[in-house]
Length: 278
Image 1: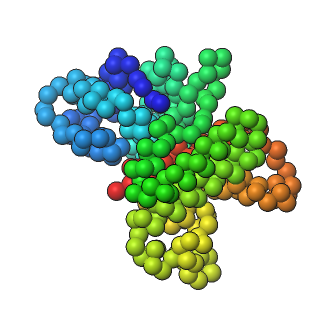
Image 2 (image 1 turned 30 degrees about the vertical axis):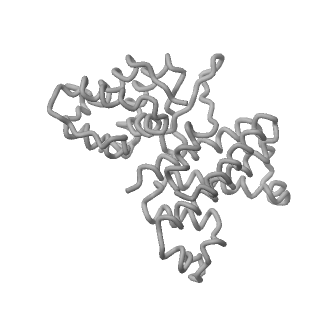
């Protein structure tokens, strides 16, 4: 779970507002920023001093791990700045200075900011399942049976990771993502439910037979998933195909713990994108 101290939230609010700084946001711009990250409660700026107002807004949902994850990642997202990566990286560095006492850090994975946890003995971020995963999946679909099955896949991937079965952990992560995208795509688009998706050869593929690549392509076209998250998730898709031993033999990779953590990282970005999509 992501849980930040009140003083950390105030420092984050100062960074977002950046009063008299090069990326200063007016009250209206702060409000729009919060809307972009789907901050709970649809906050409306009331004209009061920005930093205290924003600190109060953030504190009101300080227990919402998913909202905090989206907010912190968006602060360092190149999409947020006209200067792109060059502008975003110094902001992310300052954010990481603020988050260091909380043992959290923002890093870029496939060009997208991802929130990771720092261990007590290393500055290397550790990635596992996204925070508050069950609740976040539940918000993306009303199909309770699908939620249970998806969470079982994610839990089994974690069990494999924790017990050294790294290839099976990667397969489980890829399976979870494919299932999640299938549920989200079919829930959001009645046409897909009825007519399926168009494959590479132009032929219609029933939704129940659509694979991870096709689902990713469709979610990207709908702008539910950003390009960088899609591209890096394709690598997870490659690793997921280790379910066929011949694929792993041809690929020549023996997964380790770092490989599994690397596969969890784009899941964070993907989930943030799905939650933030209109």
